[in-house]
Length: 377
Image 1 (tube, rainbow, N blue to C red):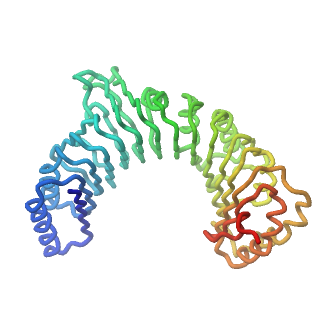
Image 2 (image 1 turned 135 degrees about the vertical axis):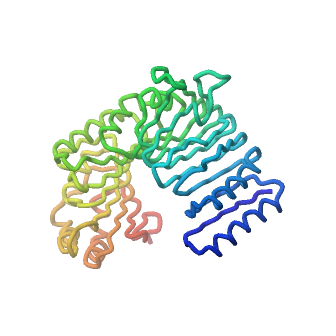
Image 3 (image 1 turned 60 degrees about the horizontal axis):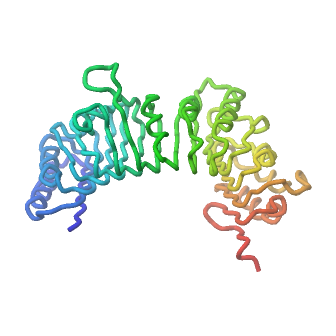
């Protein structure tokens, strides 16, 4: 049978804690077989943690899926031998010292940590006692906010472990640093879909290791507060040169605190662009012709601006500012804008927008389909 046990504790009421512990103990006694356990708890008192650890230990050898979220991880060892899906989230700088996983059955692994060092050999063990870790069935790996991957063998810091991902298809890395040998092992796998969200310099470093075999790449670069507009734009231009040849390239660009200079942007291989923050609409649209592969444009134009008067005026005068259609393949335009003056201006400019983008198939405003080519009368 498949049982999903979830525990949440947000209060300090001792009676509630006691009742929760009793319920967990009763659950462990009643079920002889459990395939999936999900834990989400914030009461890290010794009794609660030990009760949950006992529950997981009882079924660890047969669990197929396990998800965990708390401020700390178990202090006692816990090994998963048949797990296919693992999602571990620890909302602190607590160290992951007691997690042990047999990687042979693992198909999906998501790790969300804060300032943590992950030792692959410590968690997954070496193949036949060696420094090689093989994930024969892992198809998706999602790593979030792990500050450093420590791919080392035992106590010898000069001997990196060897990693193998023969079936990896999807990789997501957010705010994490990958050592070069770890990144190469991941990129040399048959991975087809890559998502990177980090400082622009880190994204460039990983991209230089080889991303040409990808089917899709999604990047969300961030910038140092001291980064100038010229420097930020040049780095994004550099990244776009590195990813040429990938069929689908999506960039989520948050223009806070650095405003990229769209007039100097050279992103000919970009297929999907999402802009949020302080967006200069006229420069973004004028630059569309420099992005011949762009198919989807998303504008979150309402963030961190005034009452919307300037943006409203822009949409009202689009037909005067741009008198000829753009040379563009743009098919989908999505705008998130909740200020009333801008909302009304966009609705009134719907026909003008369609004329400016001859290949357009859909206009979406705040999740409402404003116009769809296939629904025309």
